[in-house]
Figure 1 (cartoon, helix red, strand yellow):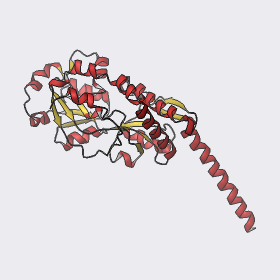
Figure 2 (tube, one colour; figure 1 turned 135 degrees about the vertical axis):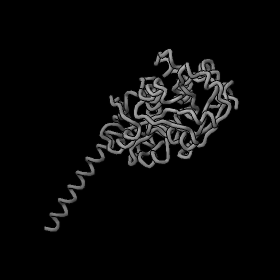
Figure 3 (tube, one colour; figure 1 turned 30 degrees about the vertical axis):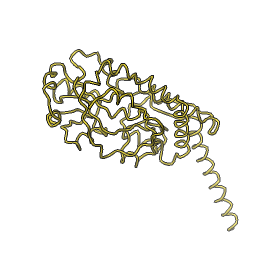
Figure 4 (tube, one colour; figure 1 turned 180 degrees about the vertical axis):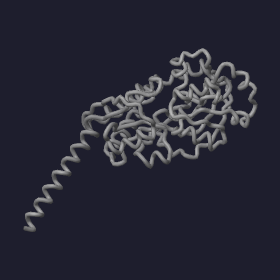
Length: 299
């Protein structure tokens, strides 16, 4: 009788483990699900998905074939990171990293934007231009209300640096608050602002011409906490892409430093350095990828 029970338990455990292994392989080595859209549908999804595909392709020999599936969901950042661990909808998500977020999902600490998102230039109303032109100190800038997503790390960073910040739940809500003059400006990353400004096609909004806010900020790929195999695969692939230059090639195609300087006149701006109390240390390999930006911005 005892032997029969042992055999039954053993068979049950074997079946359960086999089912779990197959599910893991499906998520890690075969089909990898990512979100298909972001607010305003600017081209960042193309960049991140191409970078992910590049990393997975570099590691096919070791880890096997893959397929990327796009999930059509409008999901806020914090919820997306939590959903990674359930593995019901997405397997990989890209997000600005914080200490708290790295306690929710597993980061691959290779900065996908090379720190570029930490350089922030604001959208403002044209009829407020003179007010910004008259600012001569960081304290005066702090008094002007910035709009940010309530779950964005940037909200906490600006609050820590004693900026006036107004939280909103949706991107479109921040633009509406700007029009209503309930906020004074909307800081955006240098990787975001040009494309968003073009897509808005709003004659009442302009790019503030005088300042750049800067703090350490890194976008990483995240996976489920227990999905160590996929994390290892992505990290290896990104490092290989850095070594052979394909990572930086894709990055420069996405960023267009010359256009950034032409439109934003970066060398004439005042850079305001801020602290980031919620950042984690990035794993940056090789040559600094944003040295082009350092040449353009004078402090």
